[in-house]
Image (spheres, rainbow, N blue to C red):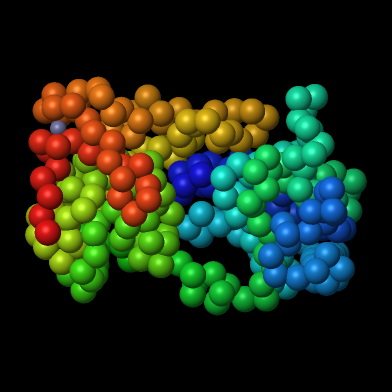
Length: 274
Ligand SMILES: [Zn+2]
């Protein structure tokens, strides 16, 4: 699933071409109406028609499209992609929706697995209710992290994946962040020392920023623009590296299950603290 750096990469790739356009309507493909999460097709179109796109930005893993009135939200989930034109290899069966603009141009929402969703909200309150702090915002300080870890008694990996705690981390970056900070995925958040919280904070900021700079990680599905791929994959230290030596200490990276998620851990660098 695209995580914060991949969604940010998509936002940056589509923003210059979307801002200033006026939406004519949205169409959904193949009688697939579930893609519209908040309204029927008819209502959705009534709400967004003739609205100009003012800005495109990211909140957590959501793409936010500010309109004259209200906000269109796009969640790519597993395999959603945004394309300005269909390529010969694009199967029309995978086209779940497409936007038509008043200038005649189009934006296609292609989604092989069909879990991606479109939302319309008049305010951003529903989004803020679903999502916690933005890890690249100024509000996210190491002190904030330390205090909020202390407030909770949860295993670290599921807590980092909880979008209501920190918005945007998923399975890949949670594993990388925990390895970088030398924190075991099952350690309890209330036992994280101030020093470890500082390391975690630093790891979250630097890993997300570096991945954005490299346009995200492509493992299987992620691409943006016209089949462009993210370049962060070669920087991964533990994710997908089970059986390989830890780049820091040489111990063999293990893959364990934590909260139903495949989780990569160095048994020597990341000691568990209950
Ligand atoms: Zn190690």
